[in-house]
Image (cartoon, rainbow, N blue to C red; front, side):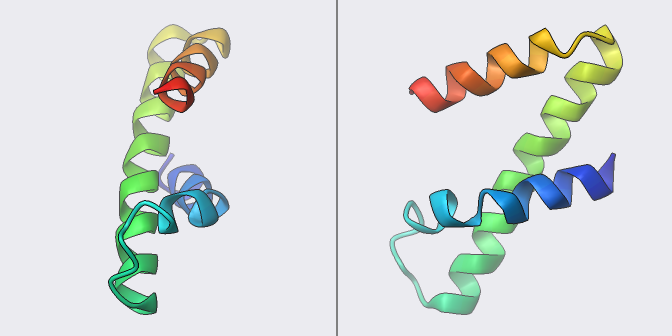
Length: 66
């Protein structure tokens, strides 16, 4: 689950980087991967608890809508 969370964080690097205020390249990358990986971990936990891909997908859509 940690590996999928890190992949999620790296996959969403472009989206998260724009939200860091551009504090410098390396800090922005680290912050983005950490933030997005936590979201990926939470979505992974939701899937493990429910065994239903619709639940984390719906949460992902809700987060994207905010």
